[in-house]
Length: 310
Length: 290
Image 1 (cartoon, one colour):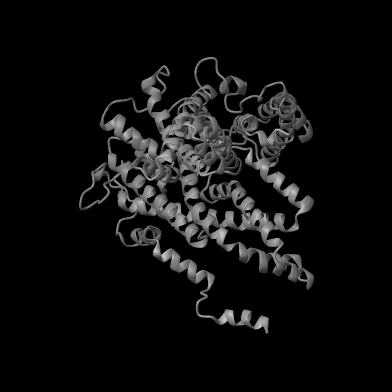
Image 2: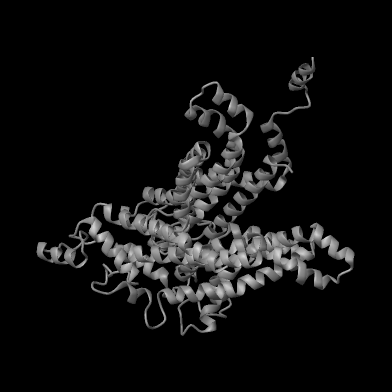
């Protein structure tokens, strides 16, 4: 177990390094720099700025220094908010930046995963019931229609027409302000989880060892919770890896809809201000999270599936 | 003599061509056919409506600001008095243009990359697929925004950025298929008779991938629509006075008291996305009857 975990982590280091290298050279080989924009700078000012951001050094030195910064947990300095370390903007002391996005993602996962599994299992056990049909059709609808459409529609219904909830903003992170954004994200991801669980449990219940268990006369409850639950969860867990990256991006879009002060705002600002360091930091942070989450999912998979243990 | 019966079978009336039987299966699927029809109608309207409506999409009219839907303006007007009906369809035109162009690039890159990796195999395959794995590790939206930030914000570049990050799935699917085709007799026969690798890929491998590719193409177009719309939400891609569904929806989301600004573009987009989903499902069932 521990050996596998260590191996899995070691394997992902080259991937991460490749991503960082790709992003770094993409940004630095592209002609132009963020300071040749609107306001004309005096040559001296430009020179000192270039020096401050190490842009006057040879590329390979810049690259090694950037790697060195990353290893020490620093994403460098923002190019828009001059002199501000990016870490302060990404991980502020108060609520904001990454913490908002993380909180949205965690709430979504914490509700969507169990809820989706329960709904899917129920639908699979009652195949062709109205609930089963609801699960299947809502999967088609919510995989086709993205949060950027369902989000504003939810605001229109719950906030503007019914006046039940605030239309946006963070508030103090209270339930009223978080309800709609989290609802939109849950709506987007629960149906897929439910649909996969449904298919999986139908497959499992048709398998031979379940038939044997039934023939032995085991009570249904015992069959479900002792024999069926593990193999049913396997496809669901392998789904969660890519889904987490999706939720992260989905949370960022949702922040835009509900004007929450998370990674979304930082991304937009970075894009409009050509804040290269910031957008590099966000891309790399996203990649790290995706890779870490995939490792967690792989480990979970191994715990549940004895076949992989060797 | 035994071989003769085999020859006879080719002309037997019972055997229909593969594509003809696919089409007949598809035409029996009413939901898929209706969806296909809706896609065609919407595409035609996106072409025709802006041409013949008599009002330009960027014609501002200060005396008709924020009017709710009426006979004069079927979808109402926006905060600059522009007709939303015309804007919805010109936006649809841009959205479709970006989506189809990006989907085309995705297919082209994905097919060639996957087919080459799968066909050549060995070290080349390992390296090419490792590259795909690495790119998979990057959250697509951030990478897309990074590309647009670097190369400037324009419509053409936004679609290149979208395409640049979306061919990964396609290449994986094509590679898997190619691996199985590679060991079929007709490919081995071509190899033995000395046909060049490039020719085998273009003449034998890629045509036999068509089924999978068509289904995936039908799924790629709506994905591209969504991605370009999401970029609009971040103020990237299409810029005013030109518009797209994403831009119209984000506009509508900022003017909630004028419900029509949100409801009509969002409705059009939902109809389009669902139609593509049902059509792709129908295609998959028709191509692969189990």
